Image (cartoon, rainbow, N blue to C red; front, side, top):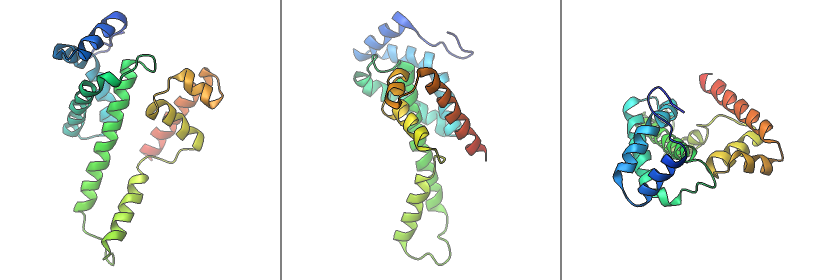
Length: 182
């Protein structure tokens, strides 16, 4: 499978590079970067619109891949999905951090003299960064992206077919996209 700005590795090539990465060979990380950076950057840049911050998240993602490679389990997910999960998590963290920094630079609203009240408002605002999802949608995303379940495992947990799960995933992303542009 080829993309316009990178090559998605498959099969033995990917397995060979992952084995080399586990052995601490940096050239393997470089080859994985060349193959997967464009895809990861696509996800990161949708979450973090600032190009410099997005590039920083991409670098941090590959540092995390390097340091956590022994945690990767090919039986649970593809390497690309694992990398996307790391990239997404780091991008969301960067977004929250940059928003928190922007909020801390704003002057306190008139009449708000209690710093604890300001912290509470900031915490509540941070919790509302993701849009409002139905409980089933939240569980679906949690299973796939936080717990690392594959589609078969998630479908079994939710008591649905894989086809229905994939349709639900598409609906969740359409829902997220609609709320983000609103």
